[in-house]
Image 1 (cartoon, rainbow, N blue to C red):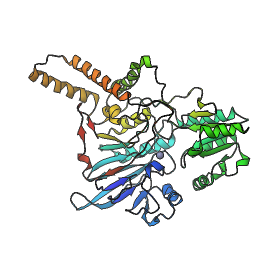
Image 2: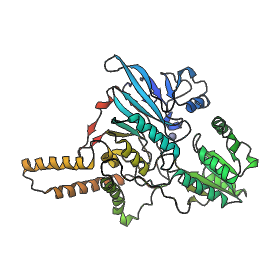
Image 3: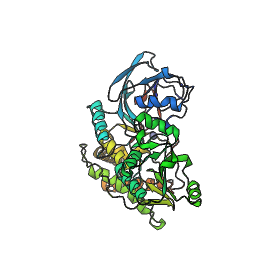
Image 4: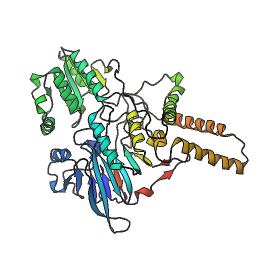
Length: 451
Ligand SMILES: [Zn+2]
């Protein structure tokens, strides 16, 4: 692997400074109690959790940054060997406690690493973070956005966490005689649990290690580690299964399970006989970008649905509710529309329904505006027509472009796995930023810049 200047959520040797956006396991692969490559920069809450997750971690390596404050690192350029500086600022990612996105400025250019994030419309914290980010960017162009592309596909259409939380509360209140187990991660969804606790006026059981996090957050009054005093238990995702639910119900302990996640919340796949309409679904999304955005960056924003219909059941005892700490596709699109970077790179190398983010969002990037792309393509085609005696009018060329896009889309869709039970989990995240990163822009056959 190339030696880097700084690494974000990647932990191999070779960089001079390391950044951790948040403490979810897929961002800490390679980090351990004995890791000691270089200084590690993270938020204050993440720093508090590190000794719990990695006992014996060398705490002298930890450098806590403050949200919304530019800081400077003095490093050595890998290419010239001369001193170089990197400026960075952290912004609230609204994903889980302590999570941040990071904006970097250095000889490699101006880069934004989103980490995992969810900025919902109507969320005050997200609005504040958005204002902070725009204030930090000012009139500069962001060269590259390293994007949380977990749900960067139009098939992911789920509502705000507020709407999903209400549905979860409704499910619990409509099962007054049942015990309830909710599958959660080792970090995240605390706001949901507090909302349930407040709405039902009960404490929620969590396992002892999870209680430490609640203590650190100052919300432990809503939780208990005694199973006998509550019917609602938040359990680790690994212990949440059909088998567990069936066993509990077999021993005459009526129990339902609730899985809060954006993962199963995909639009219904059309019947086989209508497979073309799946291409139309994504084609319409593409078309919407072209027609809806007038080029001045103030295009209509995504309006989340207020009513999401009845809850979905994965199994007779299991409800799935689209409570997600990652942005849905429309929110990602609004985010990129806001930043308008030159280039985009997905930070999730393998996710469900993975499609390269530039495929959907390239038109929202600088230099890839619809009019510019079309004009440049038409100009290229016109000059080719002159030299090659091709008499096709521009209209035919656009139709040909559309046909090619449709074929590409169908080929890509054939690789998508839509099954709720066989959806691939994300496996790898992170980025190593080198001092010559800005030159790392390539162009595909359509003239779009790609990572
Ligand atoms: Zn995460």
